[in-house]
Amino acid sequence: MLKILMIGDTYGEPGRKAVEVFVPRMKKEGLVDFVVCNAENSAGGAGLTEGVARELFQNGCDVLTGGDHFFDKRKEIEDYAKREPRVVRPANFPKGLASAGSCLVECRGTKIGVLHVAGQVFMRYHFSSPFLAADEEIEKLKKQGASVILVDMHAEATSEKAAISWYLDGRVSAVVGTHTHIQTADERVTKKGTACLTDLGMTGPYDSIIGAEKQPILEKFLTQINARKEVAQNDVKLCGAIISVDERTGKALAIERVQRNLE
Image (cartoon, rainbow, N blue to C red; front, top):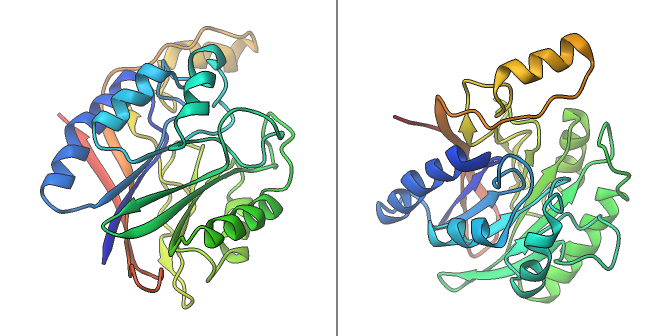
């Protein structure tokens, strides 16, 4: 049985600190074997850089997924993403961009595919269909020998995340959502062996408005004028889910939500 930790949107330096403290310890204690981390907010709250990616890998993450903010710091991540296949952006971004929509990594002799797509509903970019993109990536990963496939669905609408979890039911080991920074309580394992959770939640500061200092965000709501966001610092948590998967069949056996407080 493989125990896989999937970590929700890692926000700024506080989120990275939570990864540094908890992930190596969880691996050392045998609580998890493999870690997927959504890192699109890990560099200052928006985007990813080579330095931050290397830091997250050094602290126990095995694959990093992105999201709509993946290219916010394009100059700092593009060349690295071309060289490092374990940095994955949404498969339904326009063709030709750096990185890919999935990757294959071996853990304990098992080939694990990690697939990343972004939603279309209420999102700031006009992504192509995540359903059709997922079909293409699953076919590719299975041809490469993946027996376990994990999906990060980065989307705003819970309905869209629920829909793709049923669309992929039985074809993948897990479908988890990211992007909203709020952990949901609807974890389930279907009869066909797919673990699902609508949103993993945020790994970062919770004395905040989804990771940012409260006052500038409140001013924006009150005045409708954009204000510079700053990463908040307090009440830091690691949030995500541990998914137990039968490495022979690729079927999920259990899913458990994770919330750990950084004191």
